[in-house]
Image (cartoon, rainbow, N blue to C red):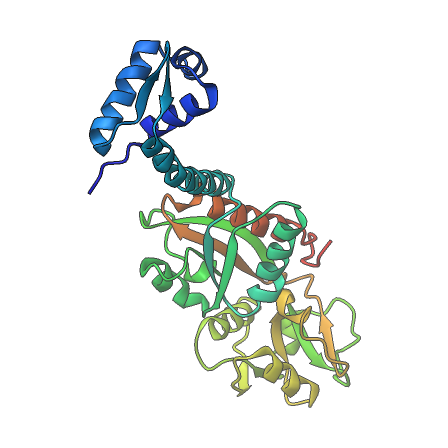
Length: 309
């Protein structure tokens, strides 16, 4: 196969455009002898004559013009590649696969994508995969996602060399009560006031652990009346008067029901901590860095009480 040398092809193209070896050398910051030597080597590599004498100058042969017709397509493709690479280095190109638990998708990921679009310049292609918080690190390890949103309770230690962790926010936990609950309008409601109530939470997994831990910190073990994992189901049960539930504020913003009263637990102030994680070293990648910054900015827009500012 013929060897094509892009650097030498650029010299040949410049000679065509400038007309003389001297002008070519000046344009490329080379000596005339270096230009001549490079073109001689190119002719040898291609196996054709590229230049022929024309008085005191040289002119391009038909073979040289044929070579340049094909070279122009190569130059155009290299320009496109260069532009795309520049965009990549600015975080404007590439694909970022984000794994996020259900409530983080509408509360954090979607607003972050909107924020990137609002910047007025191209951004990376964000691909979203809903995943349980505990599954995030399996996906990261397997290379199936590039960035994962999880709960700090399920995060590895900061000393784990595989991941870099970035705290995003402390999401307040409010209590969902049926609209007719006797304590729905009581001021300064505390978790302990609901110790005798029937509770709704998952049979296992992070939310079971978070609910149980919050109630135990308030001095009681919650009686689990119903087991449900999805917020639509949990709030439907609350609305029907079948129990009470702790609900993260990120979820309650997306799941409003007229028959449910959300109460802030100012005295107890239970929280769940949301973190972002990437494989160690990946945060320096421009595309991942842009998405991570957008997520951080969205998280920062939560007010001190956990509502969006």
